[in-house]
Image 1 (cartoon, one colour):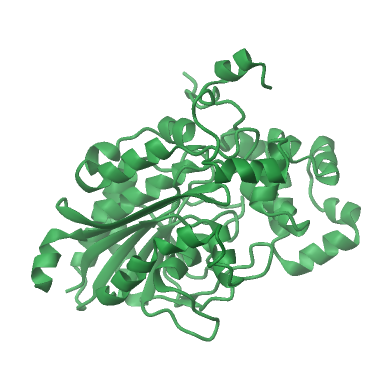
Image 2 (cartoon, chains in turn orange, cyan):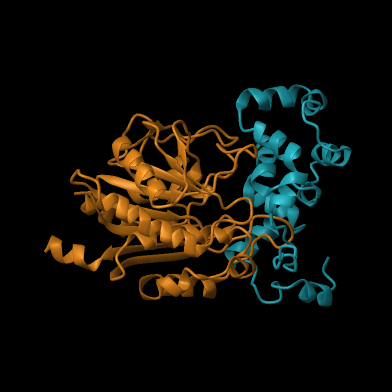
Length: 289
Length: 134
């Protein structure tokens, strides 16, 4: 049977992708950002994930204003990196586990999550940057080491789905994966954040204290954390900080009982606080031993 | 009873809700068109002719021509859309923030390296009013 064993929370700052693509990760500005992912890459390799279920948002790249789905599940065979205005990132095409994606779509809808099904889709930095930081440099002719099922969440046009809704969607994704008949190790990524505001006169807002409490509470106070109202994200973590609701999908898909394996936090990457956490289900750790 | 827009008292911030989305629809659709190279070329060749394809207001059109980044947001633009116009001009997100905050690139970048803009005094509109910030 397929099983979800671990979760990754991770910012998806576009400039991180640009830094990797232009080979400047050793510069003093970027070095502390990437140092924090060295352990993560080792962990990711050891994890031997068959599938990454990757929760992210499109940044008005693939989805224009004609259609704004709250939750859109990638069911296409593959997803090419999109041109976001400066050419597509030179990273591999993302390959789907299409049969599992279809199974999840089916299961979610019967579980009363009325998701949108994407049979064709490109992916922007929201998806490719977390892949790059967790798997390292990969060129166009390389392949990602595992399959990826993308889930896009609307966090651009207010309101984003509530943290509670995201958390419960995570639980429904867990039920869907648990009921799939192939033996697969699935890792869930919740991406975006942490505190940042990209727009208007308050741009540049960073709230380290708020981000830290978010990371602290994710392991054992996750249910209460998922009840955080939108206004708190907007006011405390910046207008784009509301992306953090997507971390609740990841947390909802894990067991209640998890262990924090790794954490990384750094300010700044461009306009943003970079946050990262790895959580493992305790019972899957026992199974490994 | 109307919706409670409890986010309208955050200073220096536009929360892009459905009302803003409606107001900025044509403007944002224009901006996102620029993510494709052939459209960037067509826009570069003749901005006016390209803009004619979008039924935006005269004010919105002028803000595009003037590259008035804050005015674009004031008229219903969203940052992820207007950033496509900025990218077309070779301006990245951080440089754009330098322009929108009026700080300039160097001072903005220095603020970020020093830990960013503190939330202290930047949570409520009345805090800015008391400081005399617009």
